[in-house]
Length: 83
Image (cartoon, rainbow, N blue to C red; front, side, top):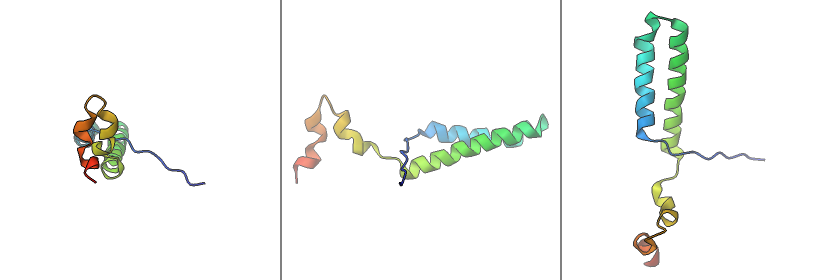
């Protein structure tokens, strides 16, 4: 049985946090503890990889416009009625 996974769209703040956290953990933390530096850099690297997967595989907002447009459905459904 093939298992599929759903990818959540992550914000740009998540990407920025992972990049800044990685650089801080590589530059400043080794002065105090190399073990903690490695652990933090590993976590921030995994966060960055998750954001890259999210950028390439997550669905866009346009796919959800029909569900989001509860109060103004005619505004967002114009592109589908022209067919």
